[in-house]
Image 1 (cartoon, rainbow, N blue to C red):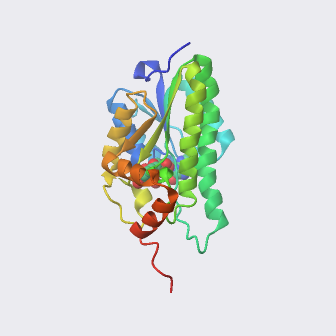
Image 2 (image 1 turned 90 degrees about the horizontal axis):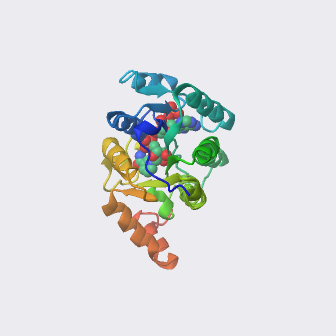
Length: 262
Ligand SMILES: NC(=O)c1ccc[n+]([C@@H]2O[C@H](COP(=O)([O-])OP(=O)(O)OC[C@H]3O[C@@H](n4cnc5c(N)ncnc54)[C@H](OP(=O)(O)O)[C@@H]3O)[C@@H](O)[C@H]2O)c1
């Protein structure tokens, strides 16, 4: 049996989805500095081209909407044909749409599920048959600390991120014997465009560069979960480890969601 191991730039290229801004763009720069050739995907071709201009021989723009599974399969086909095997993938693309539970819109749920969940599944579907055939590969799925338990306004986003933790765990259990390493990233608040519309207090928020550094260093290990900043995410884990009869009222109080409506 091949034991899963950390990928290196000698094994092939890296592929980052959601690389046109925020965490994905910062991680692209970091992996390039580590010697990787990095294929970068997002919908915005212009932003990808601008990022690739920073290191044209190292960054390969590969625009795609991950909610289109056929398009994702074509991009992965083309990348591997032109640039060699994808040794490491960071499935980072995601959207955050706040849901007002008193006035929810079905389209907001559907859009969030399409990108965060079905989009990630499209990437997994394109990658794992190739990696299992090679008996090698490393995939990190970017979830969120929101996955640990319920939060107000996150009934769509949180549901997808909790599902991604479960997806990563299932894949990790199954793909170990094929030598494929699966990891799950659960960040707390990161200062990126995704946070612009989030009116919540954002304790212990880190920069996108710090997030990229934590992800890159976590991917140098074979551990399942890479979580940061730990003073925040471990505190959240401790709260959600309490019985629901305790943690649900606690989260309601702490987030101001218990105030009476007028
Ligand atoms: N910021 C935080 O506090 C935080 C905390 C925990 C987890 N995360 C997770 O970290 C990941 C990156 O988020 P971020 O904060 O860096 O946000 P961001 O700056 O908004 O980046 C999101 C990226 O995803 C891409 N994207 C969105 N929809 C896509 C689609 N349908 N197909 C392909 N690419 C798509 C966006 O590019 P285009 O718009 O050009 O497609 C962009 O590159 C997300 O999965 C997010 O849930 C963020």
